[in-house]
Length: 630
Image (tube, rainbow, N blue to C red; front, side):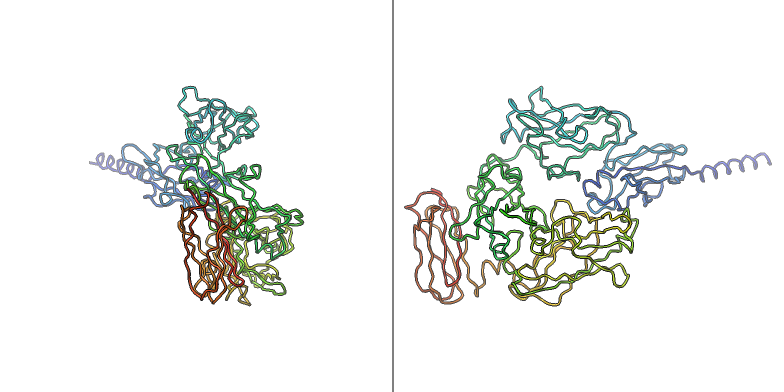
């Protein structure tokens, strides 16, 4: 009987030891791709969830490079019975992570655990790596470029990136079977080093008729290592086979391709009134992806002055063999004869928070973009000469003092500056436009980490503030400036409320800002001055305003209708001109009562082309374009 009791005791002891057994398991996940693609910040929380913690959350720690890891006590009793399998997935609290933060792998990750175990580092949503030499196969489908002009007979295709010293040693790709998919295998960098699992390859594809550096580079938005103004592709090398297959520019080639024309127009009257732009000597351009963001193609970049309204500039840009629909990005650009301190002619449109303007190409013979103002500074924003306005800014800097949210936290002795990110505004203020701008310092009078400062603007100027904040460290005078990037709402935008055109609320304190390292600051962006009628009321007119509408239909053949409104009795002239400035028709030349009017224009005796119609009513003068197609 004693033997039986002893046996039972030993069995119970064995079961208890087994039940209480824990293993130290090292989890490690590489989040560098997610950080570089701006789906999360390096300070965002990353955890591991699995059967070992009942699919709860166990925090991982960033090693400073973007690899998060932790040594976790895993109870043996939590492992799958009979197999000792550990099931888990990584989870990110980054705002841009898809699938609610979970990895999008089709199956859970798993590992057999029978003792302490160090799991290989894995890319989030990707494979494992152990830093072994490997080979990467790059494939790019060139069907779309071949449709839109690339000649595979005379042209070549390359891959270039951080492993080729970019264009210097770009690697040529080939298409031996003629299926329009070009390929190449790469195992070493241009410096002769092995490509290893765990490496991040930053790259783009190129096609060219001569050298790769002079070729056509992809314009995609994938990573945050910038080259040529666009974001690059990014790939994390894993153990085993590495095959990267992409469409050129990530665009499926089975798309509709059309020719078309987009008419762009911009009003420079504000800059003329501010005396910073001289239409007689200075040049206005449009630059975008469709002309290589340059003015080398003058016909598709240099804008033309409207002879009837010299403050208006326009350009009809032709698109050939272009995807429909497709997003075209662009900005307006001034070339000053005497730039002085205003050396950056690129606009920072307020409506985009400093980012590029966009238009959807529709493949139409005359697609007309609404008139814009340079930088989106509307005439109603003008601060007249002799007038001064002030705006008080306040920013919560607590996160900048938090070592878990900023690598080198701010200290009380450091300085904080409000940095203008609109070159036009810096010019108006007489400031030299640069990242490390020290003209407007913010202070913390109460010691509560809420910094504040009042900015006074003297006319002639305008009511629009596009900015971010920068910390100058007292220890070494180094800088930490909020992240920005090139996307929409890279900068904050604020306005002083207005009770009417050029009428401003005083005194005024702007809504509180909050320090952030996110490139998108849309939560701290205003779209229009509070209290001021919106742009549609200002431009198209209420019954109390003058207006001239776009003719309809447009394009037309041979008749179209032109509508306008006048708020009081006026002598009205409505005339049509050709591109040479010659009058071709007078539709109205008489006294009219206040109200809205519509007149038909018959162009049956005229030839196809662009025509202008202009209204003169008292001091109101407006001109629009229309296209006759026969």
